[in-house]
Amino acid sequence: MSASLWADQGAAIIGLGFIGGAHIEALRRLGIPTAGVLGSSPESTRQAAARLGLRAYATLEELLADPAVTVVHQCGPNAVHAPQNLLALAAGKHVLSEKPLGISAAECRAQLEAAEAGSRLHGVNFSYRGYAAVQQMRDLIASGEIGEVRYLHGHYLQDWLLFPTDFNWRVGANPAETRAVADIGSHLSDLARFVTGASPQRLLARFSTLHPERRRPTQAVQTFTQGSGQTEAFPVSTEDQASILVDYPGGVHANFEVSQVAAGHKNDLQLEVQGTLGAVRWRQEQPEELEIGTRSHRRTVQLKDASHPFSHYPPGHPEGLPDAITNVVRGFYQTLGGTPTPYPTFRDGLAAALLTEAAYRSSAQQTWVDVPEI
Image (cartoon, rainbow, N blue to C red):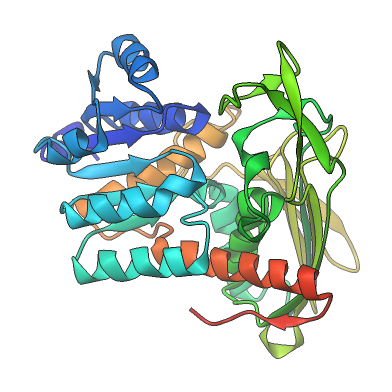
């Protein structure tokens, strides 16, 4: 889509960390005008705005009052998503939010209802849907090539919080908000729901915390700090790891594992779907490949269909996370421009939150619990 078709749209970014920068990169690649940014402090906002050549908003009110802003990209900490997104929707803005959409299912539902009541476009950046291989995995399952889906197993493993001196604002969340499950488990649950089209019915979860006490900067700066400078001990009440059994309709069940303290794993997201005729597996760290197995053979398919709308480079030129995020952003703005294109919405954000809350209840009660329907 040519840049001229974005001419009547303008974006503003809330949150200037890693993912905020990824949104700005995607917008610039697509030629979508970016009006300005709002960070966690006036100084960080001024510095980022100067570096990016964008307007620095002093407050959220100033951002929402800018007529050049039609879309708010929410990339701030989890706790601000719901209150700021609701203000943006009330101001008549469309919202593309990072996940988790809210720190509770109630917050997510309130945002969905507000967006629908105001006829505002709403999206959640479940970025892994943006890979062409994930789209083709979904098509392959729907085609019946692996037969009837019977079993899923997957994991999302990282090690960036392996040591007790590893600090990030996420470790200070309250237990019910969860951490590993809300942060990376939401990606895994959304991926499973997307490629199979099935919604979970009930689950059994067990949470564990490797470090019940961690070190943080004495000023509790909300950023990455790897044990440098003056620190203090603080108690941790959120999970580092979770094991989750999930039942889906029709006797389909899943075994999921998520961890932010799995040594040697950087961004290891994998999902395998097994059927009555075969199985298919996708691994985020080999994003253009699908491993397809049957009783008689196993093959790895290197996917590079130049005609696929999510493929943009010639064969031999790998496409990765920035390209996947760009595909999600592209779908949102194409829909906003009058060309309906599938992309994850607040409804998908609510679905992930319902599973997260069910997992927390299950772990706390040590029993199977139902996952509410949207």
